[in-house]
Image (cartoon, rainbow, N blue to C red; front, side, top):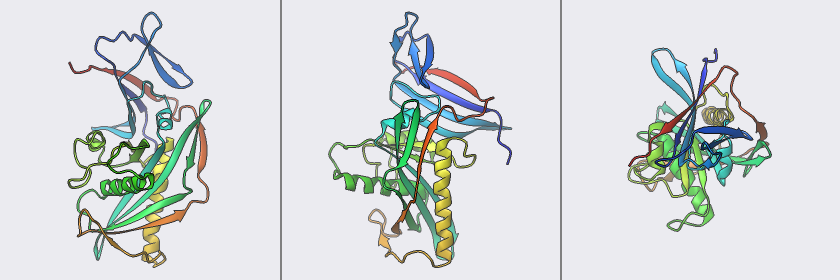
Length: 284
């Protein structure tokens, strides 16, 4: 498959009203904004996205990370170091003789800055697999809800203020991410995403940036699990009834991850990529 060309790296930057930002510089790969006197001006919100152009279609988004940090990085990884955990989730659904089967693969990662580089490691050295039966609608959103709930059970909180801040990376329902993360709409039926989580987007189709490669790993693991199911080589873990919807059955597996750790540095895009910075007017 030929790599689409060129790439677009877009930054949507929102400042307070009457801001004085007039220029920017990159310091260790991170964007900083300044007024004409050299004073730093801090944004309220930054969205970084990478896309490629398509003939007679809207650009295809490859990654999109939205942050309320004061700065954003060119390579899009600095933002993820600010989270306690980064959970990458991919869910594949197939129609079978017994109805719809959905297989979720999740990896819990940590992004940590080491000088100008970012170290990515798998926190628990395992991947989490979930099988769902008879999910109507978007099974990946249900996967996100259950993985998030498993995390907060381990943390030991429900209604109290969350002790950790986590990012979830997935490749579906991109138009709903902002409202689900803000708890303006439910993530599944009438259930809201727990506090302390925000959802961001990465696609598996081109695998150029690190997040694209990681979500592709989850996609591959989910497909391999389906093949093993066909060969009756998966554990016979008991099925559970989903408390949110008794018509849905599910079960989970923990699979060992022998090794997953990498160190990445710099921009991961081809030389003819184009970078755009856009300002967003704050609503009065």
